[in-house]
Image (cartoon, rainbow, N blue to C red; front, side, top):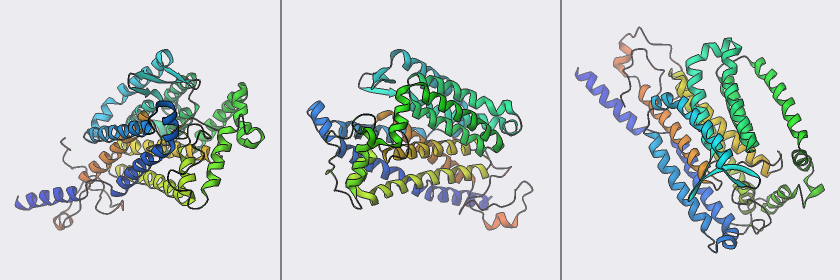
Length: 418
């Protein structure tokens, strides 16, 4: 009895000393801080012109950062079972928001994506990202064998995604459609579904994307301007050419913080969709690479936490982490690729960095979920003791190297009381 009490006390101390992933925390806070600095730098001129206060957007972004941290602190206190139970309700809520935004949404630049709520606007597509990830993670946990074997179980999440995608196209928000479709497909692929199914679906989706691109003249113009933006640099290629000029001005070490020229009404959406171009101009190639490495670190740690959860026997937590990693990684890649001219222009924010309350708060909640998964996996996967090595365990599984201090979950593990 005394040995068991001492072992329990030692486990609690170990959990306290290793309660979170330090690298993930470093990447998250660094991106938030860099984002606040860059939004302040990129928005002073336009804020002074619109409101008379050069720090208007900076103050609002600071409030959004605090709200994201506050939302994250609330989310990290919620057990994973809560998210598992609320998955279907969250999906219904996301569908209602996407339908509501078409009726009462605020139209900006030809898109109806925001629901006005007084001082703030809710971007329905950002909320839908989190809700869809939670739902698909719970679905894969319940029907994993069927997803791998049958077409019916495999197609149901894609059918849900098709409905969400249809509502997003009506806004329109094609960038969110691409990100969410890639996320769901990635989660299904990581669940062990056959690869040939994805190749078949990609062929069908690719054909549909080509048809959508040529159906409307403005979409075709975006593609052609992306291929050669300098051919019409004052019309369809204006945003991209100005972004490329910002990259060219930055050189190796940049012009210095606050010294961007392109933010002076040359580059549209300098503090939102194209904040990375201003960052490259002011901080140079090394600053841009540093931000890319921070995103790579964040995505890598999210996948690592998900893999630990999968080896510990918690598929819901694993697919939740995989979905978050895919959304953050895909959105960051698309935003940076658009700014640097590798992809056609899309209205996507840079997670944790661009100006925007909905994106920042949802991203903060996603990071909090990763910390919660990591904490629960660490709590269940305690370090082995000499007593464990000398005592046979008929329910134990073969040892797997999943990182220091972490072992797969045991069949006789006591339930986690929240």
